[in-house]
Length: 433
Image (tube, rainbow, N blue to C red; front, side, top):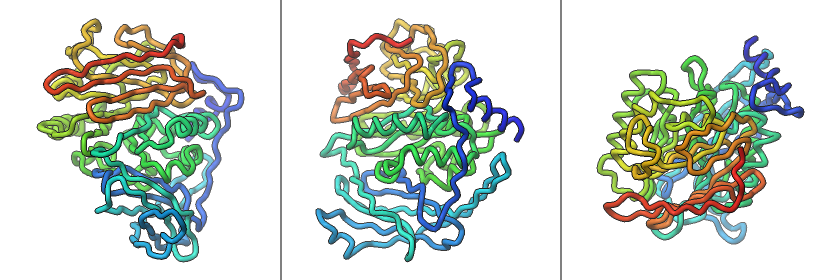
């Protein structure tokens, strides 16, 4: 408790190397009430035909319900709705100052929906309901699929990450999901920090499904954040012992895989299970595109960092299955590039492996930028978000700064039986070091 308290003081007074803020604030817990809060849509294993939603209340609320129906141009949708009873879970966490936060978390899952159709839903019970939220299910067979990608939010989430996720929504308001590459918060069990994360995204969390992978700050001594599973409702199709942290999401032409990087790095049994599972789900997969997300980078962007063991274990599988894109966090500096088909990553001049690696950061905490030659585009001291579109044989990628300035861009062109063709579209903006 003392160490966590000191850590908060260091952040509050800007005493951590590589990042300072004279306006840093220590977040305060926000207790739940009878009204649903922290409402969040989650990706499912089959996101074109289903959705999952979570919310919380205080413990006086014993039951929860999801109401949903097809969206209409007027209010008549409310005249005939379907109802789904929610699963309830009690969670009690104690903060460093001794304050206990006790809440009921509810989760519900709806299947058998129509791709491309718009739906509305609300959550609550007979005397306390949320507003009606609207969503559109993706349909890759007839529409472009788009998503946002965020590196670490982690620190000063309410005051300094909020502008990034909101600018991202302004830039790309019609995305199908948001991908968070770990370290969503700084202290794994701090309910006030989770409250800031939900505050920053506000209604976006309830309208755009989230796909989250855990980082090292979602863990403490091998224990996953106690809020992770109650507040998210992620697929459970991964290997045993890695519930809602390692999983696959299957669109018509895209497979997105979340790997639990902390468990790969530290736990032998769970490392072996993840690597065997990854090999199995990518073998003979019929989907055109494959995206993998994990927190620890295969190739680092921060000065003095290098995850050699992770690279030796993981990169041969990524090469074997010609994974198109790997989205990562952790290093608090931006970089992207393709590297040679060697486990050590030494052959930087060989760009023929086909896989594009990206490391990004969306929060304000920054590390020194590496001069490693694997990166074709890099940035230091820059908060970014990324917009990715997939349509047919083209994957288009754009990285924007927190002010909405286009900083990096490329296309990957897919040709059957060949490696992806890279088309760089780097804008005429000086590299930030």
